[in-house]
Image 1: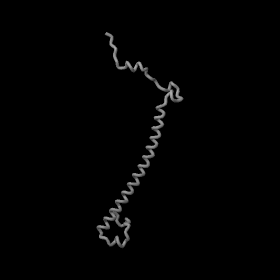
Image 2: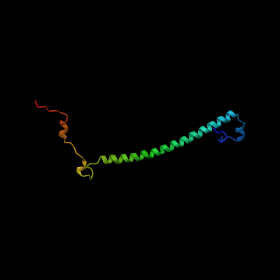
Image 3: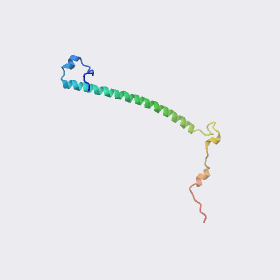
Image 4: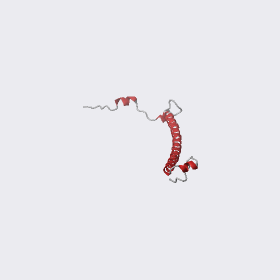
Length: 101
């Protein structure tokens, strides 16, 4: 700690009258406060950046969910764009085996 460069907030005559160990401790605490304030500012900036990213991702998710829920019966999409659908009867028998003996 460069103790001579940190402001103490105390008038010089009062600060100078304190024991050296107390002055050192005050400077140490002030340096710690400055370091922590810087960290808080950095964290706040990172939180703000992440909030913007989250908002962008939420908007994109909403768009994709809206797109995913559209098909030819509830939009102007052609029926061929719905993809291949399996016949319900096929699903009923899927997984069963018929053995000829």
